[in-house]
Image (cartoon, rainbow, N blue to C red; front, side, top):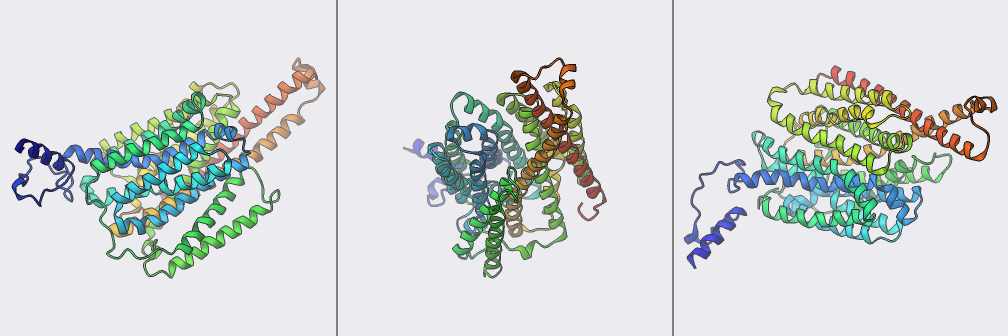
Length: 533
């Protein structure tokens, strides 16, 4: 019997329980090193696994977005939906994520970040299962909204929790696991989505996400400190459900308009302008109620510092440019150069794995890289150089060997830019303000990504139309004869296909050069900025 209780108490100690109610079984003073002074009961292995789990939890959000975006064609075809109808699934997740980020502070204040994460993962799992069972685009859109409501706040919750439970000198060991977990899952999501969509079916993408959630819940139960994420205010306050509904509907409308302008102009679809105005008015109504709330969910008055606002602007620019890069690269690989789905997915994955390796190297040698502003300048310069390099390499018939250097170079951009922005933005904020600041940052991340992708698609449509017109204008009977072609239907079909491909390549070239120019302007702006260092 004594042996049984000795084993039982050792297991409870590993899970960070204290047997204070059983004096006969008081635990001896541990001789192991204490890696988290706020939680001395946690052994080193648990601290390292805790950091990794934070990253894996964040990865659930990244995987849900990445896999959906990359396997969108297969899902759209499986449901027989038009591209405009399919955009509702993307907008629904993003609007659910915005609502989740706004409610995060209120709910986590009441129940703690550990319990919030557990409940959010349950909602995420239910949403993923509903996505897998959806038999129409409407059902999938509703399920994606539920999935976004569960998974959209996990990034903020994990990052805020990491900040709350550790001191500055303790965060690096947690960040190793956090960055490794979230970036590895983000890198693998394109390859996994292509593999599942081609060999199993699009439903398997969501079944995998649903199966991933219980694994995360088990890890959270085992390795999260038991009292982690102490509420930041003594009074949790109450939820203003009218404002919640207004924010959800408004963000859904605004995001859908931003997604829809990839395909349509306001002149072609007048209802888009009405949706945009209605969405903005709904968000403004929610903002007015927020400002009049006794305990606001998002206290904007505490975030008016110059450093934070500068960092927020840089964050927004980074996610805008990231949306442009992803949209152009996907169009270049599949529509411009004719690579298949699996090959294109592997290219994205290889670029993401460079980010994983670079993040670990950066953490290992960051003590010798103290000048963050210089690294930030190097990050924008790297983005400009990789976009320019890819534009010059994207020639007709180009193979992967010509494209990969620019794509792999771009894998360094997150480490050199967004890491430094994150490290500098929150220096003047306390623990309570950090939660508000990170919620707002991730809400803007959703909007900026949608705007960047939509902007890239609109620009490419313009460039593609201009290029197609110029190419067709240059064709006549004499040009066909010189090329050894006749005006029969098979030849004309081949010519039309080649013109379409050439137009895509030219559009990608112009858009990438524009991205390089904008990133170059950001390089100069950051180099000139003296107060953000």
